[in-house]
Image (tube, rainbow, N blue to C red; front, top):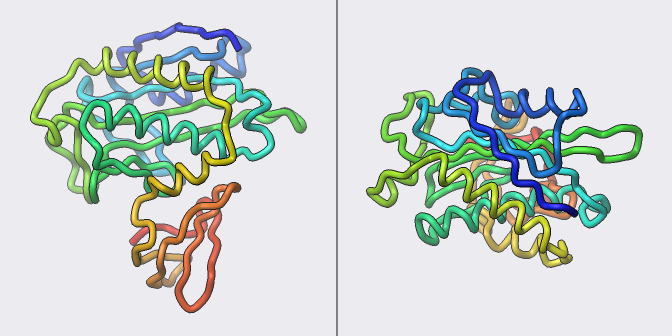
Length: 242
């Protein structure tokens, strides 16, 4: 698949994912096209959450991709691929202590450094587009009290970064990995190897009740597997972390 290197910088936008999705629906998006925002007024996170970012301090990036046949058999492989690529990027910048918190949060130790939101366009049975939104805290050193455990690359390393240059580097890494990946069956093994709190007890909430369970892994369909008195399986949005 041809590598596209289009990288656009937006001063302000409601959501880079919304902006990219608009381009997709208008027939104006290209495979590999990226949009970086200095400011995002209505950033989106998983399960309808908001993504709060101080203007200019962080990576707010969306990339439009056409998933090829390597991913269509098991769609979660694409999510795993993106998460593992972001993990590789973060470790290159700020060391090894990063992991993937199911389904798509990026953690440094027990603190959230970033998140991923992937939105797909399906027409009939054909998976046409994925709009991949990535938010990474880069230079921000003060956060809303509403955020429980945030951290930035700057707080980790003590350095300040050029956010646009970092975003370009991340975009290039995603595209290079996309071109060269063979999406082996071992992708889930790699994802689970880097899973936050794997084999540890955690507290989860389902509907109005919470419970203690042990994280055992994530299956090829993206369901979280846990174990306590029962072996359990949870789909996206079915449980939340406490």
